[in-house]
Length: 56
Image (cartoon, rainbow, N blue to C red; front, side, top):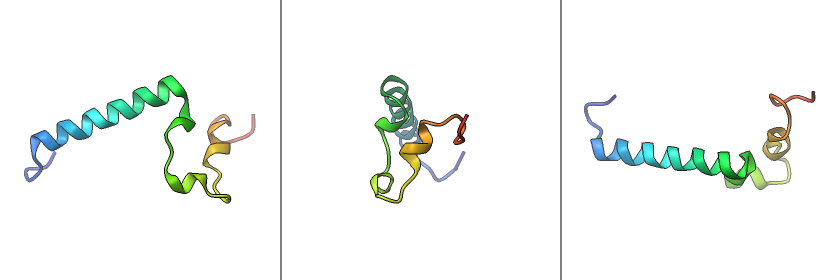
């Protein structure tokens, strides 16, 4: 907790994090990714389909 951070700002950040979590639970891990995760050399989308990031 910060003495210099506005309470309203913390509430908005919490609401955003909650919304992101709800979208990922409903539509899957790959529903929201950073733009860099869509580059050719990125492995994020592939690793999200694995168990703990490893082949099982």
